[in-house]
Image (cartoon, rainbow, N blue to C red; front, side, top):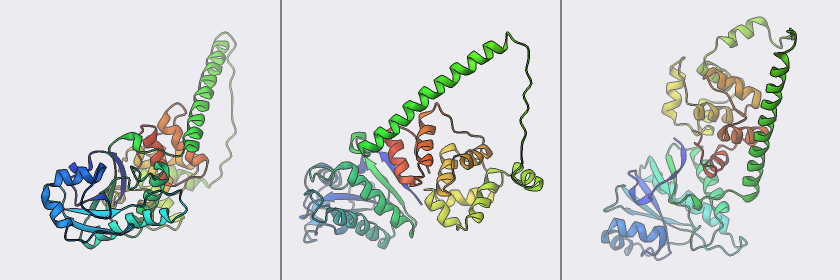
Length: 327
């Protein structure tokens, strides 16, 4: 299963469970809490009144009543007091306890709001980091589809330094691409008025001829499976790190001619921690390439060039720049 960041109204999610960012009384409040109680109807409040409240960092489960999901999991996030009072551990506990409740009740899909990031004052970029780390750790050992539901894009903010670094990288790449195009056009113009010149470049093979021919004939799925074996990874390790659903991976393994989407192909390159050259080689098998004039491609280049293969952090950045996500 996998982790997705989406823009949606959590009260309209047709899944197994949604998580309510509740207060300790569990009797309703403002924000997400109030919206969930309003959409669920009075039955939810009546059941919550029997639960005796909930401690910060803990979670309790109820029916969903008029909501389109099966369950509501109520968790109480910490109030931000500067980060020196165990807020991070309590917030992480909210996600883990909620996921464990979902697992215990047979849920295959669950949706979270960004807990504590509203009136409780937890800095949004730090709240998102805790959420993504906790959920991704859980998904390494359990199959479940998890959604981080963002009602407003402004609710997700990656660190200002990361945003600035990526933007500077993109701007510089655009400048370099323009300079390359200008130089290329100038050279072509000069060549059109000069005598033709032939160029020859010696190629020194790094592998045996047999290996080179074999890899030329490889399909995307064959190359992917070879890379997994070479790195000593299991299939599960690979598709979980790629944020890819197990069923999709089974299709890829079972179809030698499978053609993935570009985000899926890149997700596997990230999971395998391929460098830029290796990533280009894998993408080529699927009929794609990384451009130096495309924002999505440049963000991928930025992370791979910096050796950052955390797919969830990459997706946070892609989301912040209004790009398609990986996996």
